[in-house]
Structures are given as structure tokens and as C-alpha cells.
Image 1 (cartoon, rainbow, N blue to C red):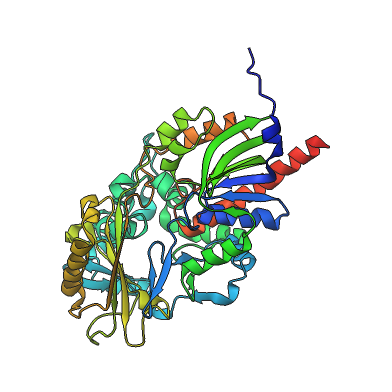
Image 2 (tube, rainbow, N blue to C red; image 1 turned 180 degrees about the vertical axis):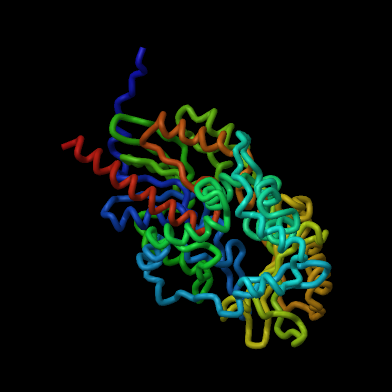
Length: 479
């Protein structure tokens, strides 16, 4: 017997009526809300916390600018500029300086520049001659034809060799995912690499062919994209979006009920101790995977149990601000990453004041170090005092930095970044199955289609297009 859909009550008919309700005001939810508003749709954006922005948080103190979450954005998609222009912060854009192009990898206890050109690659001592010769074989290696979801580590060793994994990919993954290549799926975590091999049979041939595709799509490869922030950090973008969405954004909103009814979705939530209700044609969820367990979604036991297993390792951010440092302390670059083989206690350090201006007082230095991740989760759980002391020891050994910091802050993220591990299909399938069961609900966020800020904004744009079409169909059906 077909299940009967209940008719809306008087209370449900009386609530605030919008085209799209969004739950979660991180960068994904904020972006989607602005894009939808630009398309002429009415929006309600609900956030449980007291502030929007999710992991993006900026603080300025005594001349230092501290980013507690993401530090920058890679300019890889046109959707970013739609967002920036819509938030009216284009004049506040701040691109990374030229010296930030220089990046270092720790090898043998010494910082070595990562080569960015063929001549530099030939000359570098970051890789041995054997490792360099091994790359010449890459175009002749057959694509993977196995059925199992291959890890990034297995993919890189097969195509590029062990040394390239240890001293290029391993530290890169630590810097991006706070993860380990052995625990990441190449197909889901690095889909562009996967597609290059599948389509062109070779990463080298695919890189050349991929340039043409990116020109047609207006996308930019991450290794060629410019890095940017804003004069007052990424928090300035969040603040501008919140201001633009002043009438749509509701903070401290605790959702108590979600009902699927004919023609829409009904929500009941508490705000400042008062019960409020809303009726929406469509519902977009952009909360972290773990938050689904606390949402009163219909028939969501399988979904919440499945995506609740997505691994988010702990990461602690340690900020050290120096009023003055010795000229001998290196600062001519983006910072450095630490391969696991170096057996250090940190994942890497950003030379924040070298990347963007205005991050430290004149003559000073701002450093942002990351600890923990999949590699050393227990290290991230230390006290603030222990973390600061440990990071200072590491920076003294690696950079020769002996000065006393003028400012020191620690921000622990107990569940930092979703890891796209081998077998991630099970999570994606659970999401797709639920969306098919409830076509008025869409699931977004950084545990789907990419973890970076740029990935989230691109996804938000695509979802806004889908939702705009769906609302249009609903309105047409009513008429």
C-alpha cells in the first residue's frame, strides 16, 4: 500500500514561507544562500552556532592577523569571483606575494625548495638522480585496471615511484588534508589525477591535454592558480556575506522538526528561546557529516549511520607571532611541509606574514603551524602549553628560530577535515540514495566533491543552479 503523505496543519501553513531553506552557515551554506538570492529566490539560512563561517575564523590582535582555519583560497573557479563580487569585497582582495611561490620540503633536516620548473627539477637535490630518471617511465605505464578503490599512495608509487611519494605527495597531502596518502582514495580525493590516467593513460600526457579542457571551462589548475585572501583575512568574506544575508540568516537556531509535506518541507526551530516555523519548497543541508545524527530528518537512520563513519582526524593550529626575528631565519616563501619520513612532530608551517601583507607588525613575523592529522592524531590532543612548547622546539631545529614569541595561540579542531578514504563510494551512495528518496532535499558540504574553500563555493554555485530549476518547476506546477 502506498504511504499517505500527511496534509499540512494550520501551524505548518502559518510559518515563514521561502523558496529554499538551508541548514548550516559555513562557507557552503553562505555561498549557496547568496547565489540563490542573486537569482531572485527567497531564502532562509539556519545556523546552530553563534557565528557563521564554520571553520573559517579570523582574529586580529596586537598587529597580528590570525587565521584559525583556512588561511587562503586558490583562485580555481569563476564561482569564487561571483561570490566575491556579490559580497562587495572585490576591493579588499589580497593576492599572495611573489615570494610565496617558493615552497620548501624538509629532507634530511634541511629545508629544500620544491622545484617549479623543468630546469629547477633537474638541478634540485630534493630528489635523487634515480627518482628523476624514474619519472621518465611514467608515460609508458599502463593505467590501473583493478576493481578495488586504489589509494593515492599505491597510485603514486605505481606511476611515479616511492621517493616521489615520500618527498612530494606525502607532505602535500599532510598540508591539504592533514592526511596520509595510504588512507586516501585517488579516485575520490584526487579525481583530476584519476581522470588524467583514465582518459590519457599518463599524467604527463594528461597534463598537456588537460590544459585545453581548463581553457574551455574557465577553470584553473591548482598548481597554476593564484592564491588570495582579503586585507582582514578570510573572516572578512564571512562578515560581508553575513551582512548581505542579514534578513535571511538566523543564528543560534536549534532545529526540532523537519516534515516532508505535499509541495514542500516544513521546519520547526528554536531561536532565542522562541519557537519558529518555516515552509520551503526545497531544503539544502550543508552541515558536517557528524551533524546529521542530530537533525530530525525523515527516515535517515541509514544515512546518518553511514556518513557518521566518515573520518575527520584532529588537527591543532598553533600560531606564533614575533615582534622581531633574526635575518638568518628563513622567510622567503610560502612555508614548509614535513614528510612523514622525517619523523617530526609537526605537519608543516606557513610563513603567514610572507604570504600576505598586514599579517604581522613591521619587522615582525607570523607563523602558523599544524599538528596532528591522520599521521599523528594523538599529537593534536596535547594541551595548549605542550603544543606551543613542542612547536617552538621544532621551529628552532628546522628554522633556527630562537626568539620569544610576542603572541601564541592554539586552536584545536577535534574533527578537522573529512578524509576521502578508499571505499568512499559507500558514503556517496548513501547520500545519493537519500536524495532520490527525498528529492526536495539536497546534501552539500566539504565531505562531498572536494574539501577546499574553492571546491565548496563551486559546489554551492552548482547546487544553486539545480535549486533554481527545481523551484521553477514547483512554481510552474502550482500555476
